[in-house]
Image 1: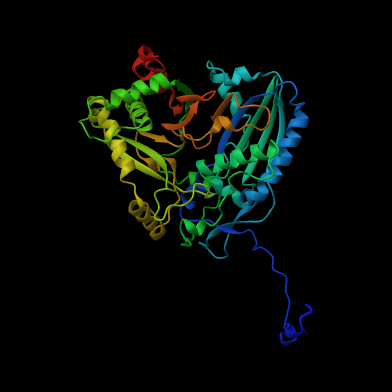
Image 2: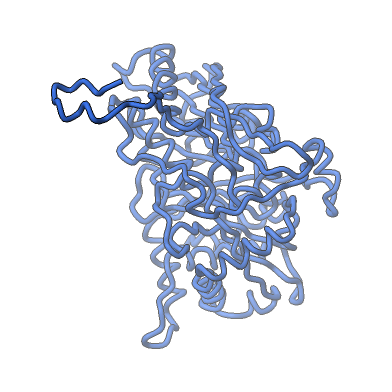
Length: 447
């Protein structure tokens, strides 16, 4: 057969076959960065919105949001799949399929936005908020059978609650808020997200690691050497920009000339660590640990783009006897955090990956160590910019999953307070009662 293009010279070229080329199937093998979170729980986020006049009724709003969610999943397609395991015991895990996300509609029409988003949010409101987010108590392991994303739209008296549950074995905080902002963009009418996700996980780590999974979440929890989880209470402490600035100034006050200054995160982290250790009434020899889940996108060599979609975090630990932590000045704790975070470079990241690949492990919360304070979110995430077309959220919160004694989520100040930080903290009841009365922690004099 000749190529018919009107050129006699082309008769010398014979077509020997034709075929249709289609994109590769949307299969994403989980990287080493992802695997430690398979026995954590779905990450839960709650966004509370007022519905202004002209936004439409609840059904109109949720229909638009659901349509935009479908569009968003075309770009963030791993969230529409399920976790699979290659055949054979200890096979590699991957995400495959297009089964989609789960969307639930609910109503709590007797509850106002202010009851949930106000500064005086009490125990009853905290309990109610947990009912506004799906998949409470569901382990990421369940992604073998359940959707990797679940969304609950709840009709409130004067607004809407958007509760989301993300399988943490598929994405981290940076990727979560990339998805949320992109979904909101599409809901506002954008033709495509302004920043497209990158799904090539080999950019982060090309090694394929097999895992022997437990029979169930319950079976894994029974292997925790520290037994069942203790009762916790969660509270939000708001630190306005002037207070954050004062805490930062106190940490930097005694630094020698030329020393690297402490950041707002390091200063506030040290402040929280010291205050929680005081509230726990630790003895001088009791070891207390601070952990921060550090984003490794910029730490790798070469760096990975910010739009990489997956997990690229590692827990960075530092520990000290409580007597030294509380007996020393604020700059001691801030300096320990600065040193630990600064030393977690590309070589340190690679060593941690090598260690895990040599001996893969299914983690428990208690593996963080005794008397831990752990930070699992960042005030740099632009959570209050997630606008679906009816304004900014009134409050952004985390759900009850992945909260253990000392777990901290940091958010930018409510309402876009530039430089302000909200501290969402979970503690056992008695230490929390002491913390709520600690004027040094609350910075009453600085407010």
